[in-house]
Length: 116
Length: 136
Image 1 (cartoon, rainbow over the protein chains, first blue to last red):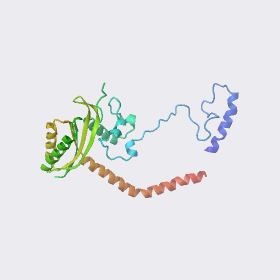
Image 2 (cartoon, rainbow over the protein chains, first blue to last red):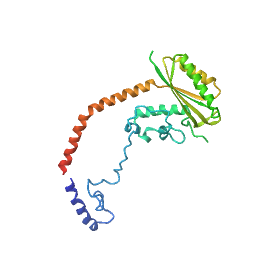
Image 3 (spheres, each protein chain N blue to C red):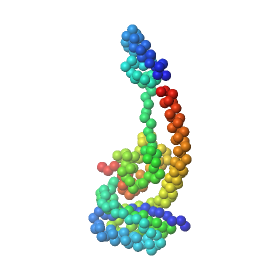
């Protein structure tokens, strides 16, 4: 693969001055671009970083409602519980998390809603 | 009937003197033992800022108890006493034994998997080393 890609920028760079400057190689890799690896396909291939469940990483089996500092990153400033799509928490841990947050709210460790 | 484990947190007014809180804890302890329960742990978290105002108070004195009992009467009696007490502004009882059981189960399962895993990681390591050898 690397041997096939190596001549590609060399052929592309002499071609660029001869051709119109506006069309600077729509699909070909730019000469000053990345030296190795496959050519990038335009701007469309924007890769979102995959979120990982924080509790799965730490191998959490039980989310303690007494530790408000653990729960607070999953609560908005206004008191809303953040959805899974924002935090990347897995379904099982989100289920435990909501229960823990609601318990913490009941004993005034976390707010139900922001105060004025 | 199997034993149940409860968390009991209550919040006192911040201006209650420490001896009063100690007295309250000891009466609760007494009530629990009378009904056949047992207080396994008592922790005084002390004055903490509450997340919202309760009875127009911003702070509260948190006390945390772990109660073990075989029937609900113990919790009922303790909650009644907390309700009657003037110093207590908020309390919460949470039954925890089922969640701890689940936690234990998951832990055991993971340990079993970890015991089985060494073979698989060894295979993965050899598989990972092969492509690098091919490129080099």
